[in-house]
Length: 258
Ligand code: ADP
Ligand code: MG
Image (cartoon, rainbow, N blue to C red; front, side, top):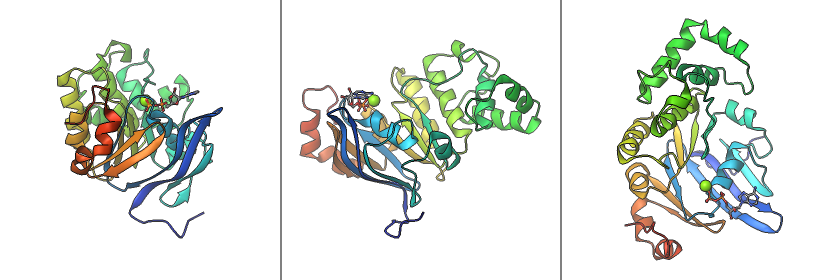
């Protein structure tokens, strides 16, 4: 179903999206457009509803009200795997890697694109040289060229996040959702991740939730500020930095945009 009011530069549109938990409004009528090719960051204090919003976009959490359009197509009720098939890939605030499998196997499993594939499926795909070559290329791209045989559990925190990006890229996403990818990273790891995200091709639209505002202002061309389940503002990084409303939403936290 294609919507005639669809804005063609928009890859993702949220229209009056709400998510309630009982009587609590974690998200309250949020509307947002993410342009195709954007490097779009969402910021806001803890509890603003950022992760909830990602849950609604990826499909892990149903909306209470409102609609979600991908390329003008209503995906509001589609299950996660259908959205993955349409190009929505997410890395979550809490890692979803297979820690006992090797780095290479984690990427191979993602290349299968199917959730819940067993290790039998993995052996079949691993026997295909093309899949292995693709997995190697993805691991090079995210800066993990030499760690393929290690179990994912043996990677450093920063390397796990790099692997999560490789896993997300393996599904050939058009929209990459990253929820606090730099959380717990050292400055060097954050710099490496920032460079890797900056180098992603323009066909991959990036929607990023991040507390590290240096990273946000280095990467993003568009910034949305959320506060207490509401959309506060969306604008160019400089506009957002200068906004009094944003300054006040952050007051009392250590995350004042500078
Ligand atoms: P953020 O990612 O911006 O820190 P979240 O989206 O995780 O915020 O949470 C927004 C609000 O919704 C918080 O107050 C949180 O406690 C609440 N919340 C999130 N998930 C649930 C849930 N499953 N049940 C009840 N409340 C929830
Ligand atoms: Mg969160």
